[in-house]
Every structure is written in C-alpha cells, then in structure tokens.
Image (cartoon, rainbow, N blue to C red; front, side, top):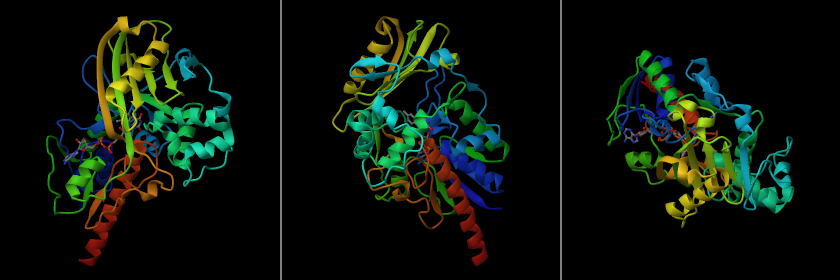
Length: 386
Ligand SMILES: Cc1cc2nc3c(=O)[nH]c(=O)nc-3n(C[C@H](O)[C@H](O)[C@H](O)COP(=O)(O)OP(=O)(O)OC[C@H]3O[C@@H](n4cnc5c(N)ncnc54)[C@H](O)[C@@H]3O)c2cc1C
C-alpha cells in the first residue's frame, strides 16, 4: 500500500486525501489549526460567516466530484424575488441592468480573449472604454483584485463569463462551505484517512511522497524556496448583521470601482438569528489603500442599497485578506506559468496559486488531484526502479 503525507487540511488537502485514499493509499493529513477547512471554514455561533468561499460554481470540476460522492449536501435556494434585487452602482447611482457597453462583452460567441493583452485594452476595442471598465469591475466578484482591467484579458474574460452566466453557476451550500468541509472530513475518515489537527509541520517529512496543500506563502517557508510566489488580491472584508428590512438589496456590485456586497441570508436564513440579515462585503484594495478606505467604500455601497442600515446594525466585523483570494494572472501569463505542482523528490504542491486551471477554489481542487496522481505515479515508478 502507498503512503502519502498531506500537509494542510483545507479544501485542497481534503480533496487530495480523499483521492489518494480512494486509490488505496494510506493517507495522513497534518493540519496546523484546531479544525479542518482552512479558508473554507464557516464560523460557529449565531453569525455563520464564511471566512473565504461562499459560492460553489456548478460549472467547475469540483462540483461533479463532490456530487458523485454525495458531499455537496443541501443547497440554499435564492428566491426569484431576491435574485431580482441585484443592484449595480454605475455613475454613483444604483441600477438594475448593466450598461449597454458591458452587455457587448457578455455576448455568446465572442472570440477567446488573448493572454498577452490586458483586459481593458482588449475589451475597449469591443465595448468602448466605459463598458470595458464596468465589465472589469464586475468581474472582481470572482477575482478580488482592485484593477481587473490591468490583468490578462483571457484570465478576466473567463471569470466574467462564469460570474454572469444564466442560469447562475453560483450555488450556496446550506449552512456555508463549512458544511461541505464537514462532509469531506467524514468521508475521508470513513476511507481510513488519519487526520491530525493542531499539528503544524515545520520541516518537510523525508518519507515522500508529500502533498503540500497549504497557502503558497506557507509552502514557500516550508520548502525554503523563494521562487514560490504569485500575484493575488488584497481585499477589505466587512461582515455585518442588521435587523431585517423588507426591500433590502440582495447584492450590490460596484461598476464605478471594484466591490461587492451580498446579503447571504437572502438565500440561506440559517446564517443569522431570526429577524436579522447577514451581509458580507469585499472591497479590493489598491497597493496604497488602507483597510479603513475599503471600509469607507463598503459603507458607501451600504448607504445606497440598505436603507437605514446604520441604525439596524446588531453585529459587525472587519478584516483584511492579503494574498488569500487565489491567483490572478498578469498579461502574458496564464495558470501554466504559476509555480509547478511537481517540486521534485516526491514533493507536490496543491493550492489556489499553483499551476492548475480553474476559478478560485477550483485551482486548489485541480492541483490536489494532479498532485495525488503524480505522487502515486511517482511511487509506482520508484517501486519499479527498486
Ligand atoms: C474572502 C474570500 C472569498 C472567497 N470566495 C470564494 C468563492 O466564493 N468561491 C470559491 O470557490 N473560492 C473562494 N475563495 C477562495 C477559496 O477560499 C480558496 O481557494 C480555498 O479555500 C483554498 O483552499 P486550500 O486548501 O488551497 O488552502 P487553505 O484553505 O488556505 O488551506 C491550507 C491549510 O493548510 C494549513 N497549514 C498551513 N501551514 C501549515 C503547516 N505548516 N502545517 C500544517 N498545516 C498547515 C492551514 O491551517 C490551512 O488549513 C475565497 C477566498 C477568500 C479569502
């Protein structure tokens, strides 16, 4: 029986552990935190905020994999009346429909955008500058960068297409992503995976193969390899509970800059106590912008879309996510240029900033499966040589 060590018990680590165990490997997962899930954790308590992911995109490879194993669980349905309450801020006011120029970029049959040109330049040729900027800012919901127009056109086009698809790709596991993680952990346990929490690994184990399923920053320290870097976003996060008021927006996207605020109790009332709404927002920040500036921008959106919210607040929290929102690709680069999964000597990387395709957590998932197949292949090869 092959033995595999997985470092990190987030979405990537659990996907790797399950895949390896299903192939008959003897798997041990070491997780530094006292619970599994990493960024995909959902807070315990009256306000069930997700630290990272909210949306599970059904167009992604993880969807069918989770579904086949019965791990998605119940989904929270967004009532059509609530869906109709999506608002877009454009030229300082809220509107229901995208500006005309932006619609040109959502047309089916558009050619694939190039990798080596920035999105704003490419999109301006098709839709004019105003439409291009609005589309770039909308796409930030799935890429968390303050200036999506400056990124590779191919990279932004894929995220824009997926984030605007109808019917929507975004689905919401009831009770938050933590419920999916809980089911994955149970499944791994039933497959015989050994999972040790509160077990930070400071030195790479010598008994390969090892899948390092941490953030890229943590992998860089663990592997002592300064080349393990890639661009990511810096985002102010605001979590808010307010007394419920009929007529609040479901979500508001800032097309003038970047920013997204969503009332998650619209689709899942279990996330906050009865009579309260849970709102979470993310405001991508430029390199010199402070968290306070991001919070102020979030409050501007709240003022527009959630009447009287300041008098209704029952709970509030703010945070900064720096380099935690997955990879972004600059012009001239694609996922293929990110740090390779195979690091040699039986060490493999999995995570959302390594060389694997997909949107957000899909990169973690794809890299986890690739890492395991390489690890098992490597082991077989070693055994043949032995
Ligand atoms: C604000 C925000 C919103 C997001 N929204 C979405 C969304 O809507 N949809 C989506 O698909 N994705 C979303 N993402 C991205 C998603 O959260 C991540 O891609 C995914 O959770 C990453 O999983 P991972 O397992 O690769 O990494 P992590 O979740 O970071 O897991 C790594 C694990 O490794 C552990 N670890 C680190 N170092 C060590 C060590 N030395 N020893 C042992 N353990 C260690 C950590 O404690 C952690 O548990 C969002 C992210 C953020 C921050």
